[in-house]
Image (cartoon, rainbow, N blue to C red; front, side, top):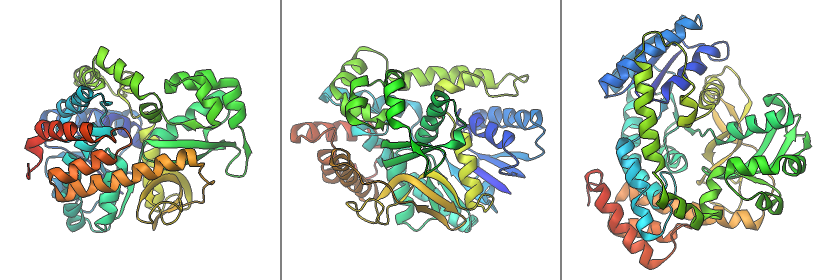
Length: 421
């Protein structure tokens, strides 16, 4: 089995390699190709990946290359994890929206739109080249904003599934609180990428006992602390929102905090510099603890499970993915991309039925889906007016004067990535 990772020079990659090394019985990788134009970073991470494989007794081959077509030739699956513009662009996304009183964030709001505009054309170009070099390969998208990028891929006819680590992170958190094996904890995870709620947490599988009231009643303060939301909000909602709902439910507080301290991008840039220094140590053969602070917890285990199912190794497994709606949420268009539990096979992901979504949540999902459609139109077709329409439609903007200012700021900070600007 051959897997290729586009963006293999990312500091995330050792998390992924750790999963491939540990879980080789689930996903027997013969060849792992790391693809990245950043030669120095790629050399560091490629060497570390080989040491990690050796430590785990994994006899798979690790190859590095800057040539996409060469790297993906004959691949069974291609994982895409890109950051167009690097951490410098991320730091911009997290700062200029604050001047208009809006959250500065890399996957939602005005900053998230900027990232989508930079990213969608690049990922689509990569996907077309993958289709020619490895027409049967599955594309697993971990590139944010995952929902918009995955919709772009599916709309263009690619064999693609989107992946996010939010669900598996919450599952593992709940398993620890319940003192239960993670496999026994089933989430009724519903919504869009970075806009989801756990409507139910069932112990013992999909038909098991709903322990959501127990979790909120006994551990609500701890869960709310991790989400950085008031405990009473969880009690009143009766469900567990994802961390990203904080940008909606505590918007003004987040803006104040962001204005007072360094951006998350600046913090991550510092971590990345330290991680790269650690990766250069020839004695290092495990992922360092610092990587857990970088983000992407359990990304490797989610990626292994998804790739194994898509490649026929765990046919019929159920996993939270980003895939086409197909009536799963009846109030959304069929071609919208939703983040829900799905049965994953070699034919792709088939969403499972979900509980009816309360209007309190369904309204926000519908609103954000409309924004995502307009954001994708702006990314594909360009133009100031399309950017403005997407921003005006976003629940975190939604005001004419703010949308005008944000449009100008977005274009000014991203002109080099926007051929029409």
